[in-house]
Image (cartoon, rainbow, N blue to C red):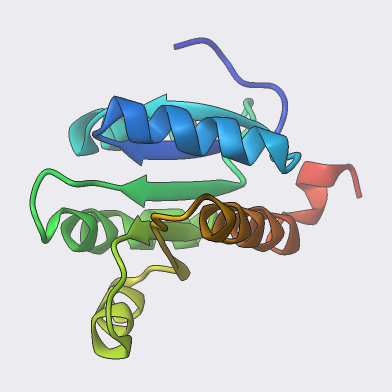
Length: 146
């Protein structure tokens, strides 16, 4: 893993095809570079290394989209939200459509936002545009040179 000097998004996604599609779509919406981690463990280890180094750029957003089992996103959020919140990094979850109560459970566990996988391309584009907008609104001022 090479050092990141420019703003970036950390993506923890255990489905390589899904990660590739999301990364491509994020870039078409002018998001920064995406650093992909393929498993929850790799994401946690990578984030720990990145956040321990105060001399390097931290992610402006962490997106978790784990499909290993139905509770994988919730488990990741529960384990990692405190550290990310302490560092001022929002944590977003990308998941299948769910009702308001399930979304509230993720938010209560520490997710800053919940976005939904979309089967139709136009709906997917709209959702990804919302992710980029969320990222832009939550940037640290020092991360954008202010």
